[in-house]
Image (cartoon, rainbow, N blue to C red; front, side, top):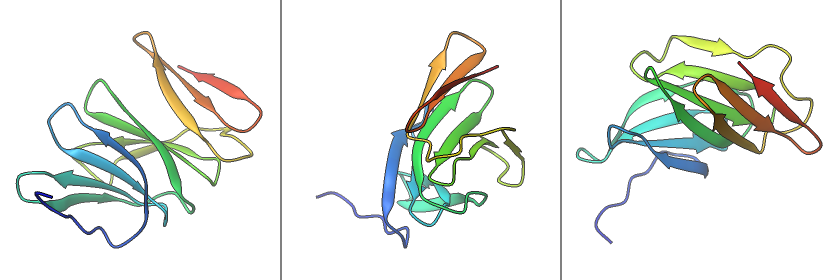
Length: 117
C-alpha cells in the first residue's frame, strides 16, 4: 500500500476526476475532493442528508452527486458554496448517474429513470 487517506466516514462512491483528483461520496451525505499528491481532502461539499451513492463529472468543472435521500446536486469543483439542486428529484435513493450526449444526464432510482437537461 502506498498511502491511506482518512476522510472520517464510510465511503460509498469514488471516481477519478479529469484533473487527477479523487471525488468521494460519503455515508454522511458529504462529498470530498481529495488531492492525491498531498493525500488530503481539499474541498468538502455539504448538501445531501443521506449516503452519496453515485458521482459524475461533467463539462465546465462540475460534479453531480446522487444520494439515498433522492436528491441530485450539481457542484462547482472550485467553489464548495456554489451548488444547484435538481428540482423534482427521485422519491427513492438515487443509485446511478450517466452522461447522455453533451447536455443531458440520466439518473436512476429503484423504479425509475429520469432524463435531465
